[in-house]
Figure 1 (cartoon, rainbow, N blue to C red):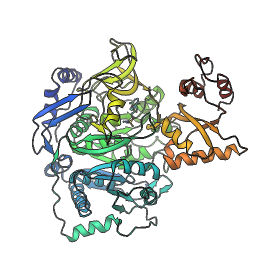
Figure 2 (figure 1 turned 45 degrees about the vertical axis):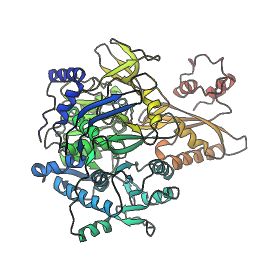
Figure 3 (figure 1 turned 180 degrees about the horizontal axis):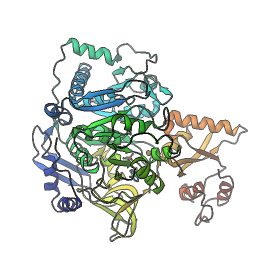
Amino acid sequence: MSYPYQLKNFEEYQQAWQHSVTDPEGFWADVADHFYWRRKWDKVLEWNFKEPDVKWFTGAKLNITENCLDRHLGTLGNQPAIIWEPNDPEERHRILTYRELYNKVCQFANVLKNNGVKKGDRVCIYMGMIPELAIAVLACARVGAIHSVVFGGFSAQSIADRIQDAQASLVITCDGAFRGGKDIPLKSVIDDALMACPSVKKVIVCTRTRTPVSMLKGRDVWWEDEIKQVETMGNPPAPAEEMDAEDTLFILYTSGSTGKPKGVVHTCGGYMVYANYTFINTFQYKPRQVYFCTADIGWITGHSYIVYGPLSAGATTVLFEGIPTYPDAGRFWDIVDKFRVNVLYTAPTAIRSLMGFGLGPVNHKDLSSLTTLGTVGEPINEEAWHWYKDQIGKGKAPITDTWWQTETGGIMIAPLAGITKEKPGYATLPLPGIQPILVDENGNEIEGNGVNGNLCIKFPWPGMLRTTYGDHERCRTTYFATYENLYFTGDGCLRDEDGYYRITGRVDDVLNVSGHRIGTAEVENAINMHAGVVESAVVGYPHDIKGQGIYAFVITEKKHHDLELTKKDIIQTVSRIIGPIAKPDKIQFVSGLPKTRSGKIMRRILRKIAEGELDNLGDTSTLLDPAVVEEIKQGRL
Ligand code: 7RM
């Protein structure tokens, strides 16, 4: 593989960015030319941000798996595609070459077909981080089914919501998943979820933990048995389904400011081009390098930068089943050492947490293979940035702080590693093809440098979301209605004197806890499910490791009960309704909440209290009951 569209120096970056603004269609056509299309496009781009209606590469036909697998077989057939590192370091790792991965994806594509899956069907995938997860994702793409991967940390209720919204007909899961010292009983969670999901006709269960499971006759089948079936059929070929560039590739649910997560829709052609282009340019990936992204495939980072970006580039991608601190806080460094990892892409929360263990777990690990470091998911504080730079990169590996979102499909603002300048805490400059602008509350563009505003994007890019599944109006109101003719990111942003961008965090009611997006309304809904709760309000507060912690103000029924027990119950409830990632860190019982005369909760005040900024709460005189603020301040945790 060579990457003719990989930018090599700052001049090329500047020229490419200019080109992408003056002639976006020409710019993207040049990139897209380097993929395998069954048929090329009639038109590069048609768009309006009003409806919105955005189409890239219209008329083009392709299958993304032919770009990730088939086209590499001749040259890279024996190269490792996936290196899998198990949770337990004592267990043997697995290496799948491009040919082996291709064969397995084809086999499982036939399994899907044998189980009635057709183009356009929705398939929910709920698995741990094992190679079969990547195989399942790619097999869906091969047969034209729309995958909806649900992170293994979500609860039965969350899965059920997502399955119902997408009307999925098939679920792929495992008996269980190993994560650190825990076994998560995935199949039993699925069984609970499916009680409320009549659309699901089949469940394919892959063996991992050998946890006992119950298999429902006529519905549940074993992955391994189904593979044997395909082998008995003599492993027939699995031709890739011909997809339109604008056919849906996948749905991925993400939290917003309302209580219900949205199904972000990505399409085959544009997403492929964008995931690949951003992978190659941001990380400056060179053929044969070993690349390790520590995200979970259940999040967009895993979709774009464990599976589709790297594989479409013929890269070697490391898939790690476990967690950074198991069996000890040196695990990432052991993996870097073991596989001679060149590019490491992780989250600030992981860096901060590992930093807390000191240098013991880092010392005596050979990290000399590392040429490039990346971060994603949340703002990185300077201390963590420098630790990453000095202790992990030994001062010589560039760091790329990548800003992007589930909705953007791929990296938007980031240094091109080693090519454009880096600045601690800054995502720096937009990739060529991306036109960010800052606006004030009225939607007026804020020009010049040394300014703060809401971050918007003013021109389409191939990886952007097309809709939110089953509810286009929601897509319009969430992203395209706040400011006319702009995509609104929900993030606040600073553009410094040099024109470099620094993301300051969400300006809506979305929290970012350890790089996971969680809506405050979602957590409130879950808390309110608890029988003793009357009302609640949730805000974020600065947390040393997680970035943000969850602070819940809760009104309970006026009964004599054990408040400590109620706290535990509430945490349990949130864990059951959403998943452990949404558990509140602090719960303060209050007798009332600060509300405006129209009954709207004044979150601004609660946020200030949670942050400990008690002296500057602003004007509270217009509140329905100003006295309640004093009580909340007194009881602050
Ligand atoms: C990739 C991903 C998106 C939100 C986004 C931001 C925050 C992501 C950075 C960042 C500061 C970064 N998708 N965010 N990257 N903030 N610097 N480099 O995380 O949909 O799950 O979250 O995450 O607020 O809007 S996501």
